[in-house]
Length: 459
Ligand code: SAH
Image 1 (cartoon, rainbow, N blue to C red):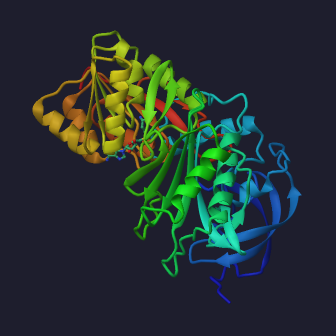
Image 2 (cartoon, rainbow, N blue to C red; image 1 turned 120 degrees about the horizontal axis):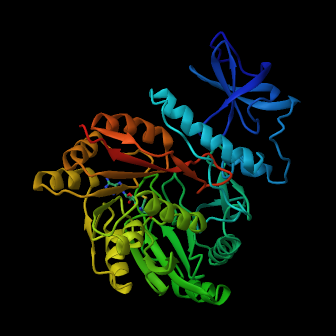
Image 3 (cartoon, rainbow, N blue to C red; image 1 turned 45 degrees about the horizontal axis):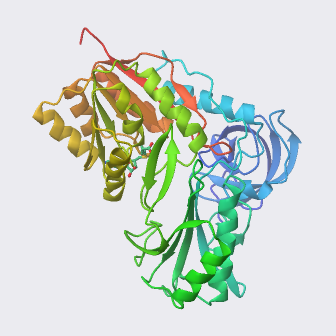
């Protein structure tokens, strides 16, 4: 039996939940040694059984709740917590919003920035079924193709049909697709034997257009019995806009491969944000919560206090959404994005919407910033919207050289935001307004926010 002298497997412990992990697990500490337990809220006192002990932490299973948090709501979606799909589903929504606001404060405190205010998180009126996209693993289990989620630390899928956060139409399409592929006896990829075809089913739906894209991710670039599968899918999902086979033959955790073949309908779907029409390819990033995304972009533009004369950079520009939505408020927009398919979408989006003053470059953002700073580009305002890992020191350095007056940081990870803020401040900037969190991801631990940095005049 594994032991670390503090706790051991099967031991029963009672303790208070003092923190929450990034995955939404409650944290109990015994002599500073953390134990993670699902479905426990801060302040609750719980009795738990130790299920797994590692060197620096352990996992436990809830046996009994001795003190229940007033922030808890009971609901019938318990599997959303174990699946990790919606780990905060048992928190009152108001307390999720407060928790996100406080988390940002604490993360800035950790890096030594205390003179920053955080506004209350802007939430959703109906914080469920907001997701416009899902990617679901598909496996052969118990004699049939199964879709659902992987239980933590397991390779077995727990079947579910209602993902709670997805647009319900998306959940329906996942189920229909699985059943049709099953009827045609298509095999699923098996990580151990490395044989089999199907890997994931991805569905994306335009919130404002209703356009529907179904992507079957497979290890082959042709499905057996393909014609019949296509015809069955078209019959069962008459409003399908785009049916794509994505080829991902590699042994990898990356879900989508780079090659797409359109089996029926269009190569892209359209959606609208702030009245602008966007095309979206399977590999392009598109914000998953279209309702709050409109607020996010509007607020980012508002906080930048644009005057119509600026040269604006949109870094990590995806399909050009931020850049194109502010184009009529500035003189010129230059976007940079690493995924070529997304840059192609951005160029089409610029043309269809007859926006003349925007350009998008396919490149690594830090590399492009270095290039721009060497060329002597002097933007007035820079928007960045990086992935979870945040910015790089090279990008921040080049930004310091280009010295824009305003720098708007749209972040989906306050830990890297706070880390980067330290360096941005060293380059002569100050956080000039309270940070604004917007709840792009209700029922999950993800935290989106906008921070405005302004150049200090004496530096
Ligand atoms: N602003 C866009 C996209 C934000 S998501 C929107 O709101 O929709 C972050 C984007 O950064 C993704 O499109 C991703 O492909 C891109 N990206 C990731 N690493 C990058 C890098 N090193 N250089 C440029 N873009 C990158």
